[in-house]
Image (cartoon, rainbow, N blue to C red; front, top):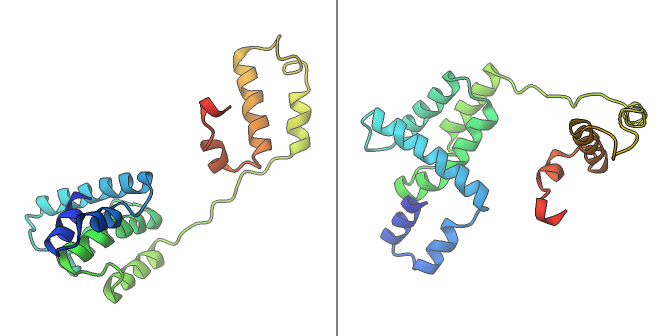
Length: 171
């Protein structure tokens, strides 16, 4: 992010506008992008590379592919490098060469669809009505935790994003 701000300053973009551009994404996205940017910097330093080219970007992405990273993760790296490459080096991470490289990666390592686990609500509710879970005041703490987690999963439709969004102070 500091690199993008520096590049925008070099291009004579007003500071307030530059800060808006740099902070255009959510904090969690910016933190992930910053982490990926640092990884790219380390890769560049290890290769003694000061000038960046499309070919060098492909070399970096290929190193991620060889390490076995999922295509989605590699795409996140690509997205995180889009602004630094554009503002700092006038490189487009969506160029035909890079798009073709990602297509080749997808061909060699297809994305596998992960199906959600199959379970029946009636069986879970029946299990939670057994003597082990029947009276909250009498069950063990681990059993109460298990019961609570199942009921939360049922209430949220098993959407992990909703479960992750819970905040202790908002309950």
